[in-house]
View 1 (cartoon, rainbow, N blue to C red):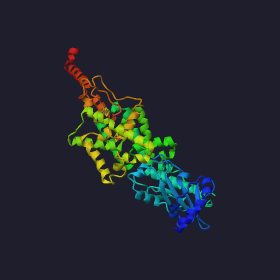
View 2: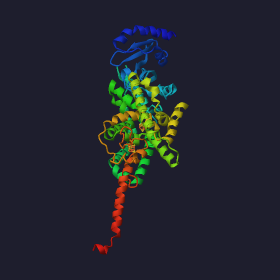
View 3: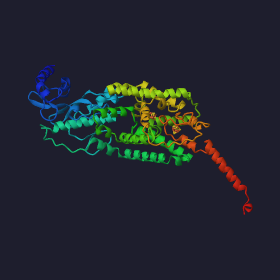
Length: 489
Ligand code: SF4
Ligand code: SF4
């Protein structure tokens, strides 16, 4: 208590110099928790915004806010505010989170998880080589990340370590030798090189399938094999191994970061997400939202695989009448508008509503969280048995955002015939997401680019035009066969 009063008094005395150097005052209780014997805090003059902490005349170390020295906008588009204490010999005394708007930390990551993460910094050398995650790297000490909040943990880590380095290497602690270290995002790209390679192979294969879609869909067995195989790849590799399920949070973050100052650090820190988003932007422009939703979304793949299995097991399927189905589409756009509107106020405000996406429960946290989140996610998966991709069709804000982007698409490679919708309804009836109007047109916003209707388009036993062509050909072949060779001569 005596320390607090003394510190408060001395801190008031230092106000003039703090204001001069535009430093924020560190909360006194936080300073004391980092340096329990402290009784004086002084603004450190110079280019680095740190405050020197003393016990009597002896320098204990420094405290500083990471967002004042090395700010990196995280998911919220704003830097996390944390106070770090570093001793006079360069050892981190601790990290205290002061404030943040990270949606991923507000819901799904408990205070204990966050405390466990930041407590790992106490005792580390501020200029040491430290790495988040289990993957070993020579000369580095590993600390555990935050399950379900990889990017936030990485951004926080970089901000803490770079700020500490800056403080340690400026004017009193300069005799400490600072080792060279590559940027964290470069380390991540090196560490995840095999994941990036497998992802790139998958994306090249998908692009090839789309370019040669007419060739592929007529080879029914090969097409089915590749389709199921790709959905399994998306679910297992992208969803569970890379934890690269894209989310509406990425779009909200992107708008925030663009509005508040672009930084590559946030985007490059997770290479798989970065490559995937780059491909989504490319495919959105060329073919629309369907390529992501139909091929690359792990939750979409999970629902579709479940629906295909249920079909084999002869579960009864229920579709809403067309009028209801088309009205329900509007829900996902309304959800998107609410999320966008709230995010303009603050990303933290939008956090509880982002849970409309079951992705974090299913992939990042693998159903290990409060029962109501698990019940919601399982409910959606079970509903997909009876109504194909119900979540995608009516609720997904990411799907809605991508649908809006579909307006920019350049190509329309999905073929239609003049008989589509009159007199034939085969594709309209078969499209599992109900994206074909009864009049025959494909509704590009709702299409998942599964190519099933293209397989039907070329099917000589389903599509009336192809059936007629086959019958004509067969008649011709029969006629040729019955003409005796001698008569021809
Ligand atoms: S609608 Fe949403 S959940 Fe469905 S496939 Fe698209 S992004 Fe994934
Ligand atoms: S069946 Fe055709 S219209 Fe329907 S989702 Fe698949 S590609 Fe799109």
